[in-house]
Length: 174
Length: 105
Image 1 (tube, rainbow over the protein chains, first blue to last red):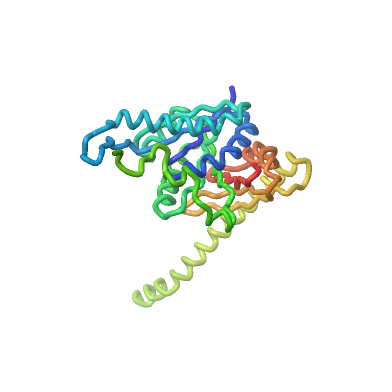
Image 2 (cartoon, chains in turn blue, orange; image 1 turned 120 degrees about the horizontal axis):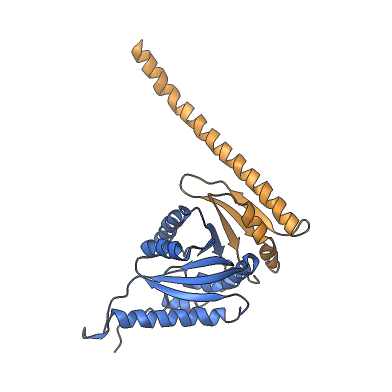
């Protein structure tokens, strides 16, 4: 039986996850593991237009966000066809959903991505790590993307960074 | 007599507390150094000799687990993949493996 590797992507980690995907695949190859990319997202509110008319309910929004996230991760993972990789999207509070996913999937290795800048993100990541560290059966692995050079830090942010999260909308539709 | 004893305890306890705390920190650092030596030996064996793989071990604290940080210069990231399984086998519970993914990983 091959090893299982659970990669946890929480809101704010999307760009780091995509940047570290090659490193994740390297680790999966070395451990001969199959990978589950699990994207955790809060339950989205219904989408309303500027007249407060509902244009998409929570279910429709969940379907849309799941589709966007699966497409983004799936297309990035297509390059690495030698590693078995699946993408799942889970809705709910990450602090509750992540331990459930880890319990169900029972991975040998749990991969986290370096927390985004900001005190709140770091606190959330710290709390999540504390929860996951209670599982004695799995090892924790943290992937840090390469630091940006001073030249690239002033460049225009990428699409996923501008959006903040997959499927995020900047404002109500017209 | 009793007040003298209380005064002695109150004046000595901060120093004793500091010594106990330093002792604990030193023990944790010693344990981290042993982990580092073990991981380094495993990585060296896996890579058939010394390499450009840098291993930095941070001792666990009350607030956070220990870190075994692996990094390489840009262009040498495959070394991490080669040594990864050997490193993972040697990292004890209470430590996280942190991999710094360079641009060519």
